Amino acid sequence: MQLTKGFEQAACIVALLATQKRDIPVSSGVINETLGGSATYLHKIMRKLVVGGLITSVSGNSGGFSLAKEPEEITLLEVYHATEGKVDTFPDLGFFEHAFQDFPSLAMKADGAITNAFHHADRLWSDYIGSVTVQDLIWQTFKVDQIPLVDWNNLSEEDIKGLN
Image 1: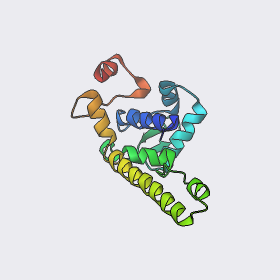
Image 2 (image 1 turned 180 degrees about the horizontal axis):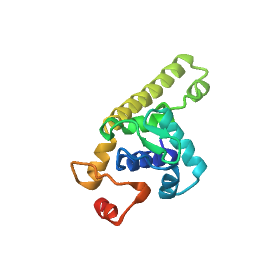
Image 3 (image 1 turned 30 degrees about the horizontal axis):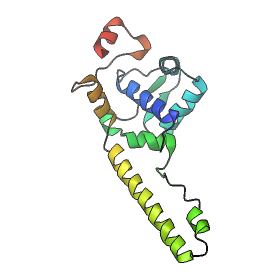
Image 4 (image 1 turned 180 degrees about the vertical axis):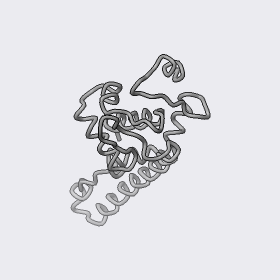
């Protein structure tokens, strides 16, 4: 399985918002400038995160995006579901049934065996990334017990020093 660029960008947006002062939304322009890339594509990702209940959007001159939940309540699995959908790595396109069509019982068993193996792997993977929160990632990154908060809209020299 390979995650999309959209997942990585979504995880980065959530991490960025986790380090934002809670009472100040980050403007979409700042998010676009900070991450780089296509503003249209990033807007689609942010919309998925809003629909997924991970971030909120406030319109207007002082508007922007904020976390909808605390960083310790947001898991990587939630970010995955918001951007990628359901975890389902095996496409099950019927190749076993076709290859072993002269042996239908064997084909069904082979198809079931490989499908079950991948469903089990999907559950294990989901369980693990479902246990990793945004807070966990930030704590590992900064080696602190409290997430440093800055205002990404008006990043100062002091903010930059605080994040380093």
